Every structure is written in structure tokens, then in C-alpha cells.
Length: 127
Image (cartoon, rainbow, N blue to C red):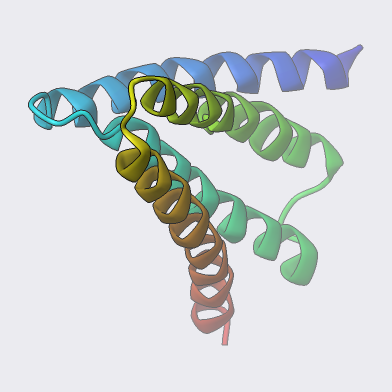
């Protein structure tokens, strides 16, 4: 039961932060149809999961419960790949194929690069 609560609390905080940050970024680009808020949250979430998993796996920085709270809960609530799918489909339905393709490419490439960057940053910091 404790583990479920950890995931729930982390997810709740992550969801609230996702909503606030995504809205802030999208509001700054309000004239654009491109989902900048979702892209920013996904990239930041990928960077964070890279840092946290590297700390957990190679440094033993925290245990199972903390990983459930931060990775499964917080980042599970924070990252927005469900919104990514919805917004990409919405762009396609709106005949914005180029923007949809740009969203897919930017999200995937930037996300993978951010995970690696997070892991390398931890490796360099712990030398």
C-alpha cells in the first residue's frame, strides 16, 4: 500500500507541474500551432529520467521507494506522451501534416538525446 501511495503522490505533483510548465511555455508561443509546451515537458522529463536512472543504477543513490516516488510517480505524471499522441493526431486531422511530422521527429530525437545527456551529466559529475 505504501508503494501505491508513493506513486500516487509523485504522480499528482508531476501532473500539476506538467500542467503549469506546459501552459507557461505554450502561452509564451501562443501564436504558434506547434505544441511547444508538450515538447518542453517531454524533453525535460526525458532529461530528468536520464539523470535519475543513472543515479539509481550506477551510483545506488536511492532505493526502490524513492525510485517509485520520483520515476514511476512524479515523472509518470509529468511526462506527456499521451498528450503528444493526441496533439499529433489533432494536427493530422487539421491537415497540418508537416507540423505533425515535425512534432514526432522533434519529440523523439530530442527525448532520446535528453535521456543520454542526463546520464552523461551524472557520469561526468561523479568522476
